[in-house]
Amino acid sequence: MSDWPDGWNDRNDPHGRGSGGTQPEGARVMRHVQRGQVPPPAAPVPPVHRPVPSQPQGYDDGYGQGSHGDGYNTGQVYGGGGRPPRGPRVGPAPDWRRRIKVGSLTLVVVLLAVSIGTYFWADGKLKREVDLAKVIDRPEAGDGTNYLIVGSDSREGMSSDDKKKLHTGSAEGKRTDSMMILHDGSNGPTLISLPRDSDVEIPSFVGSESGKKFPGQGRRVKLNAAYAEDGPELLVRTVEHNTNLRIDHYVEIGFAGFANIVDAIGGVEMDIPKAFKDKKSGADFQAGKQTLNGEQSLAFVRTRSAFAGSDLDRTKNQQKFLAALASQTATPGTIVNPFKLYPTMGAGLDTLVVDKDMSLWSLGQMFFAMKGVTGGEGTSMNMPISGSNGSNLVWDKAKVEQLMKQLKNDEKVTVTGN
Image (cartoon, rainbow, N blue to C red; front, side, top):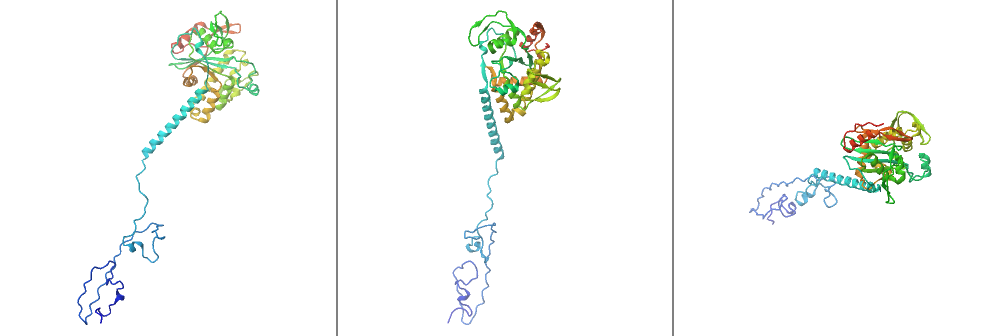
């Protein structure tokens, strides 16, 4: 006979625990049961259900699925409540101030590197061929900076087609086609054209190639003859002797370089007051505002026959054009645009001849001074003329003396020219 109550057997507790709870029981204390008595059935203990965290979409429990189809989840199997949910990884917020500082510093370094590279590239293109140390008996230096700017008829680097297109002819060597003194001082820039037909005295000088000293003989010639006789050094010597003004820097540009600069910046806008033609230079202009390309610009500044052979009218056109060229070149649209800056600098620097002490910085100051003349900050004029000696133009001695004194002392210019 069994000691278990009637109706109680192993089927009611297949695990031998006698309880419907989910946790194992401790040691069971059997009550004393008298025969014939049936104990009341024990109340079932409801199972403890812990909340199972919902799993993110696509969650994998390591067995190929996030939950079982029978509703029995992994949290119930292991009794640990399931794995913690996998949310987005939370890290420190980005330090935008630091990123902006690093980006700004990087940009500054890149711009500095490009600027330095551009400076040395351009500086290396300058042809420092004129040695002002060979010029003797020079006047004392004054205040401000004086540039002697020369446009030569050099055809160096030009093909036969270029010479034909630009109406330059094929003469050998080179001569001065225009000459100007640009004074850059505290009272604004002053641009003075020196007519190439100016009547001047050739002083004593030392030959630029031979080193031999040639004594002055009181010869009076046209100013452009000095350049033709012994080049830039004698030209500087002659200008200084006849003006008593020390020239600090020399700048010369040939036909090809002049035309190429104009084309590189997309042309120069000019307001031509009167229509004129000149077969020798190829000029053919209508009156009014118009944009000149390189070929037209060269014809404009070289035209002489259209003005009854007068060099004074031509020098006025040269001043007007060069000031406009500088004004339209020294602009942010050209300087900060590499697609304009590099072609413009390359076109000009390839044919630019300067003195050995000329720096790229000084050259830049010269262009900005030229721009100032156009902007109304300075003065442009011809050298004062009192008459002529044959075909030579004679300077007004009193006015020239006063003008050069004002420039030397960096005073406001009150003298007027022709």
